[in-house]
Length: 54
Image 1 (spheres, rainbow, N blue to C red):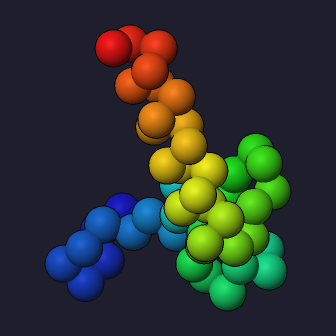
Image 2: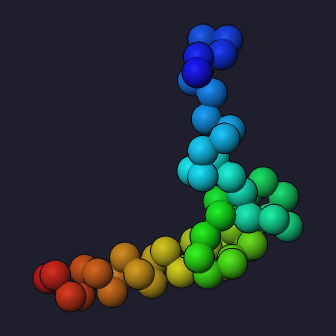
């Protein structure tokens, strides 16, 4: 699985991008294609997690 000194990960789900995201947003269950929207959702969820655990 090694290619050119790096590991080849293109076949893994972690390396797949959301269709229509221009290769900027990884595949996700919410179907988010916009990096800005993904950043907002991630920030909201981090705050929610901190509130629950803190």
